Amino acid sequence: MVARQLAGRGIRDPRVLAAMRWAPREWFLPPHLAGDAYNDGPLPIGSGQTISQPYVVALMTERLEPKRTDRILEIGTGSGYQTAILAYLSSSGRVFTVERLPDLLVEAEERFRRLGLSNIETRLGDGAAGWPEAAPFDRVIVAAAAPRIPEQLTAELAPGGRLVIPVGDLSSQELVILERPASGARLVQHQAGGVRFVPLISRFAFTEEA
Image (cartoon, rainbow, N blue to C red; front, side, top):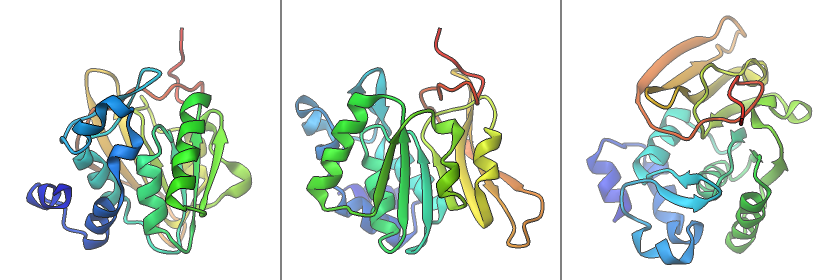
């Protein structure tokens, strides 16, 4: 059902639609919200965080254009739903995912085990600091909005790589796509429409908790 809804909203990549059909979204929600899993809206997952609506997950994944062998860096594991989608699509690659909230990360790791996903590595910490020892990455995706794109993340993007990130504040956010040409030349930036995400909490993104 979710794949039909997404196709109706313009998601065309058959691999992305297959991944969305495969992932049991209800597994990534608190039990009392399982019945709402396939509603096309964000839902709370605790600790002031949300799981993005299916359309936004599919849109960001389609814009990321992950390949089967990619090394992917994800900032903001959250429930682990987007992580699982990426791991499915990069089945011969690897997903490195960073979360700053320990309770969410522990729960996500258990879901990965249940799904049999062995190509995911997790880290507790400040996602905007990147994962330098595992860089460079073919793809980088950020699941929280930053007022500016953290320089460390662009530095870890491989030639021919792509970064997808929401940029803005609580009142206005735009989905931004950065591409590094295979020649390693200057980054090319595109915009992909308005979105709504929780803020990225990081001293590297100039958004800090009080």
